[in-house]
Image 1 (cartoon, rainbow, N blue to C red):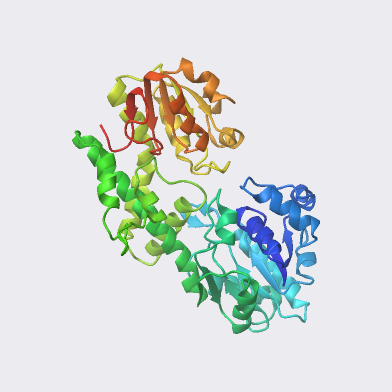
Image 2 (cartoon, rainbow, N blue to C red):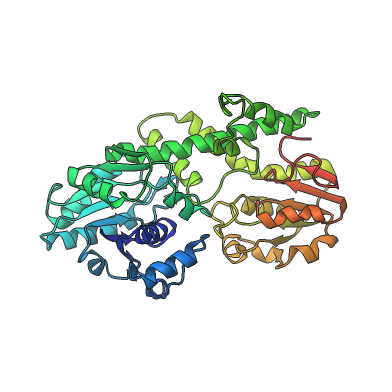
Length: 445
């Protein structure tokens, strides 16, 4: 198929490159000419595992290109995927970028005799596609739905594993307002062997929010349980986690006697909270829409409140264990909100480091790739010393906080740690794995 993708962020670029790799002719749109030039040269503009090789391949094969002109991208397109940002503003999503794109698409449709299907991939709250977006398109095109197509195709991509998730999806959701759009979505994803669900655009929008809301709820629930455990004392929370995970409703027992250990269990381990571009924004938008309809949204509020407070537990636990931490030198390992990405949006490291600084701690920090982005987001970055090689600096710190579970930090167990305090904010190291004076993590006192 001939596909236009508007937006070259995580969703737009990964979608475009993966679709091109499956044999579709894809053109991506970005207003920034520098981004367009880099993409046409086969140079990624975001950090994502596996992207450099795949982008280079589809550019060389002439299956992928980029432009800064929406009209140029639509000139031959059968389907256009809209993947621009919907940032959070006071808890609600900002639809201004989508509105501008829909106006431009509508202007093109007005002067075109071809049937073009507009499919939203941006995350938008339920009832956006069939009302707001439809209205924008009909107004700017001076045509009615049925003279153009409209659909919603939510993404379920994890940063750092986005190509893997796109190429091996657990399900693909087709939201549609007209049958031609459903037909074209089915053709677009024909190369994928996965469960495919067709539904209304409102249902497709809600699937994304419901999915993220439930995952975020699990994270906040286990963190609250861990915090209670720490207050009670005398509890090894690793034992609690094992006891929970062995419930056969979480880990089914097969006829052979073996257990299935699903990935969902990773959301039932305590940590310093969820971050990134999806969970915080999506739960806030979910809550905001419910409250606008008169619902109390008590669970959403609880999930967000627990998550907001969780990063501050790090300094509290350190102070409880070590006494005053004012003037202390602490090494922080990991700044990105998760490994294999340079994304620091809503990263717990922002709150943890700010809290440590406010308590008079001298912070030195490392991350393999996210330091530049972190400096931009941290209001008081001059108060932090950033280093390129944590291994060479390890000896001079007696307290280390591991925030992001980068694989390279597993190596810390190879060093002399007998006199050190390690705060493992992501549960990277099991009980007794580190030979240190104090091993601290959530849930244990």
